Image 1 (cartoon, helix red, strand yellow):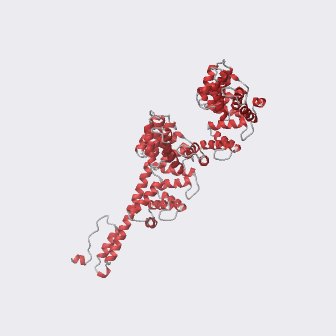
Image 2 (cartoon, one colour):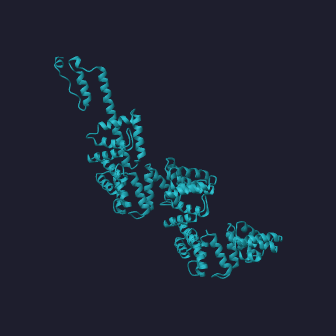
Image 3 (cartoon, rainbow, N blue to C red):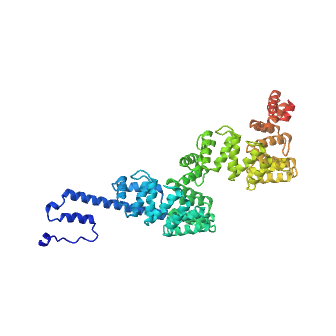
Length: 584
């Protein structure tokens, strides 16, 4: 007791915080007046608890950043959301943690780094990308590797400084050399795309492989992409699928989507549309926009599920509202053709325009088509021509064909049949059916080239054999009917006319009518001829309007009606039909 009175105290337990030592040593003061009051002790204890709690919160934030970054699942939105939620769950507010970081940043690069994040994303303070940039720089100079990476990100995207891809590359390289996995992944992206450094796909592949082996989910996915497309390595679709699956199992949403894509198109596996649908559905639930679009596509065309055009429309709308350009385009088609919704050509045009502004080539082509035919907008052939030209430069072959068609017929530009022929040839070399057929027409009639009926027949046959061009099948039949570079075969001709007439091709309806009228390749059937001429004339076919008048005049398949014949001849004559003019 005398020893205590003389000032002897027990030795503090090693590791006891200095703040606690200060409190209880003050309480040991011999003079009662020198001891703190109980309220002061409680306030001091509360302060220590709060500060220690702040440190725990900060350490957890740093741990989670490192965890997100290392695995490659770091998303800005997700991490910022985590920061805010974690602070709230610990009964704190953002301003309080910000101030703690601000007051405890000296000689603490981790706190400096977090303070930069708070400035960058407006957590507990006003946004200041310049402050964030300076703090990332300071923390990186103090050797904090995550700050070195983020300093590279600032130069990469122009955060608080001007964009400088070369500088970003150098910083990512330094961080990668220190073992920062995400920086290694970033270097792979830079080498793969030639950003800030000369393109080197082999180097990119090696870097993706290195970070994938460290468990970086995005690198596992990217490595699969390299194997799928033969980037920096030999193409190996089986390995690609295996890696997509591996990243998908880790929860990487875009890899779930790509695994679905592989099953849909048989990449590294047999086609399994049901499995593709299930994977798209799984990723779409997580709001993965590409998967939402893909799911809509499945519903529209019945891929792995029953067709449901209303669901397709809804999913395209959801993805389009979040900026997915292909969804915008498909939503435009839904409005144009009334798929899962009422037809609205004005909305269709607006959506094509929005998607084309994002560089969607299909929509650029459709904008041209809308301008050419007045779909949702007034006809403007010059704008149609310009849109076709723009999309044709991207080798969209529908647009190359339309670009040629404009030159052939002088739509929005001066007529130039040589250019038309050359453009048809470009698209035909890529098996574009309408262009193959148009080449046949060019050779048959000498459009932009010399007449060559042998080649005309070959191109018509090639297009008809592909089964998608009504005009080529009709033209092929025409060759058989009149013996153009083949023996006359009226039976074959009528079969080909029937094939396209059944699909509503009006020129075939007209020629089939003539076959029935005169018994060409079939028994004469004047009533059937009359019906076919009537059908085609209602669709605006000029020669059929004349032929229908001829039927009324001469009582072919119908009762004689000279007044009706006169009206039809007059209608055809007004559009320049020579025989109708003569018959009038």
